[in-house]
Amino acid sequence: MIKNRMRINRSNIGDKSLSLLISVLLGLFGLFCIFPFLHVIARSFSAENPIVRGEVVLLPINFTLDAYKRVFQMSSLMRSFMNTIFVASIGTAIQVFMSVCIAYPLSRKQLQFRSGFTLFVVFTMLFPVGIIPFYILIRNLHLIDTLWALIIPYGITTFNMIIIKNFFQNVPVELEEATLIDGANDLQILFMVFIPVSKAVLATVSLFYVVQNWNVFMPAVYFINDGAKFPIQVTLRGMLFGDLISGMLGSALEESSANRIGAEGIKAATSIVSIIPILIIYPFIQRYFTKGIMLGSVKG
Image 1 (cartoon, rainbow, N blue to C red):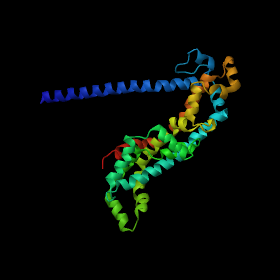
Image 2: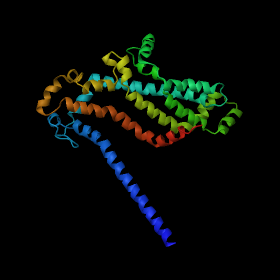
Image 3: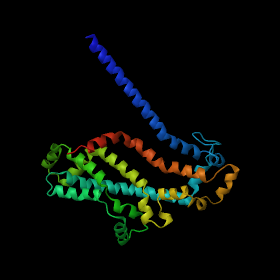
């Protein structure tokens, strides 16, 4: 009896030690992940000279808001923000709608040739189209140099659709049958039964789509030539690599010698401003995130 208790105590001590070790390692990993973020924040609130000299690490030096003021005064940068907001909002709405419209019929067992349709959709994820025929298609659709080139061709992501489909397959069939008895058609079943019980998975997929659309970069490089229609990520890339920063700052660069404002501070401030919308949205969806992924990943 005593030996069994000793073994249990040793087992508990071992489990606690392992949990403590895992917590410490995850804490250190979290610090490594958050360090670059804090460093950029510190640079965005610092004067230009300390940034150039490499003195800014985690805390701002010569605290100033001039970089943020200058960012919001740049008309081209604000125009890029508006372009990205348009793509993220309209694109996400279209993508979620189309994903639901495809996922619902594919989740119904009574659909004829369901396996074939599913294979057809999954095939596009396994074997994506080449960039050259894709570009020719976009050109023939007259979408070059339009923001719709970043929305319409990406109306559905197969992975996200499969998450919704798997969730729909696990909705109790009794709910559907009860609605059918009341005389509802397929559209009414979708909007009155499936969507109301799918808030978690739809919120999760919406977050995926929002992040995807907010960070759109390569499609804009391929299909957008007009600088006035660049999304924020393309404009930010031009600033970080110096292609656009001189023209956008103008005379502001001359003020850097006065220890006030300069290119490095504005680059950091722009980087922070570009991720603020995602940081604002995430807390409202976070409570659905884990639940939505788990429910949508269950194989039906």
